[in-house]
Length: 598
Image (cartoon, rainbow, N blue to C red; front, side):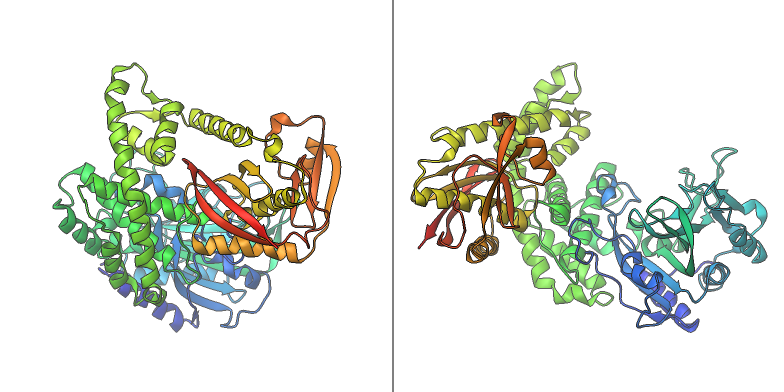
C-alpha cells in the first residue's frame, strides 16, 4: 500500500535511502547558472555536475544525492490549470562513473516498491527504442524484466520521448528510462501507453543513462566514464501518494491557498475561474520567493531572468486584483512560503528582507499601471465585441502599452479571457514605428543631434558612445539609442527602458564610462559598408540615413558604432562624466542628461 508522505517526509526518506547505499548528500545548485545571465534558470542539477561527468573528481565522491530547486519558464502561460507549475523541487541521485544502468534501475525499483509502497503491478516503464545513431536499450529493458516488470508494461519509445541532452549543442547525453504509475483509469484507446495525455499513466521518476557525448559534427560517441542522473518531482510524487487529484491540494500549496482565501473571501474549489486565479497567484508567489531568495539572488528587471521574475510578480498582482484584493498582498503570501520552505532552503530566510522589499516595490510600481490599463481595456471592449473580428489590432495593443504602460503579455491574457486574440506582429510594428518617430523628433533641432563641432561638443558626442555601451552592460544588450541632443554644455541621450534607473545603476553607468576615459583609449575611424560594420558587431542606429559607405568609430575595444559626427582622438582628456538627471521622455523611453567636468 502506498505511503501518504508529506514533502518533508519524502525528502528525508529519499536522502536516507541513498545515503544508506553509499551516496553522499550535496547541497542543491543555485537556480541562476554560473557566469551565464542569458540562461533563464537551470531546470536540472545536471548543469553544475557536467565537469564531473566529463572526468573531474567531485569533492563529495562519485555517488551523490540531493533535493534541488528547479524552474520551467516555458510553463508560465500554462499555469492556472490543476497541474502546471513554474517552480518545483526535484529529488536526484547521481553516479559519476561508480555504477550504471542496472544498478540505477535496481535502486529506483527498490525505492518505489519497498519504501513508497507502490504495487509493482501498477508500474510501467519506457526505454529507448534506438535509431540510426544509437542502438536500442535492451540492457535497461532486460533489467526491468528481471525485477518483475512484465514485457507488456515495458515500452520502447523514440528519441523525443526517451533521450536526455545534451544541455547545449554538444556534451554528455544518453537514453533514459521513465517510470509510470497506472492510475486505474480506463485506457483512452488501443494505443494508450505511458506518456499519453489521457491521465491513465502518471510519470513518477526518470533515470538518465549518461553514456554518450555529442560531438561538434553531430555524432554520438560512447564515453569512457558512464554516469547516472535521475529526477523525481516532489510535488507530483506526494500528490499521487496522498491520492490527490492535483498538486495544489497538497500541503505545499494549501497554506498559501488558505491565505488567499482569507484575503479574498473566495473558497478554493467552488468556482473554476476563481480557482485559476488562485493557482496562478500561489504558484507565481512561490516561484518569485525562490528566485529572489536564491543563493545568488536577483531583482526584477526588463531583461533575461529579471524579466521572467517581473512577469511572474505582475501576473500574480493582476490575478489578485481580479479576485478583489485591493491592498498589497504579495509580501504576506511570501511569509507563508518562507514558513513552508526555510528549513529545507535556509537561503530563503537569509534573504527574507530582500524578498519582502522587492515584492513590495514591484507590486506598488505595477498596481496603478494595472488599474489604468484594465479600465482602458474595458472601455475598448464594447466596440470590439460589436465587430466581426475577434482579433485585437496591434495598434490598440500598442495604445495600452504606450499610454498606460500595460505589458503586451497581459493584453494577450485579457484578450484570451474575452475570446480574443492579439495581433502581436502588428504590435511589434507599431512599437518600431514609435521608436522611429522618437528618433526623428530627438534629432530635429541639430543635424546628428549636435549643436556645433567645438571641442566641448566633440567630447560630449564621444561620451554618448561610451554611455550607450555602458547602458548595454548594466541593463542588457536590448538598449538602443532613440535620439540625442548635444550642446557645448551637456549631452541628452534617449534610450528604450520602461523603468527608471536605480541609484545603483546610475552609479554603475558613470563608473564604467569614467573607467574608459581614464584608460585614455584611442578613437579610431574606419570606412566600410553597413553590412561589414554589422559583421564586426558595430552598433548602428537610424539605418535609413546611411549611404553605401559608413564611418565606424571604435573606442578601444570597448565601443564600436556607426556614426558621422566628430570625436576626440583619445579619451584621456575628456573630463569626468557625471549624470545630472535620469527621467522619462515618453512611454518606454528614458532620457539621461549628463556633463563632462574638467
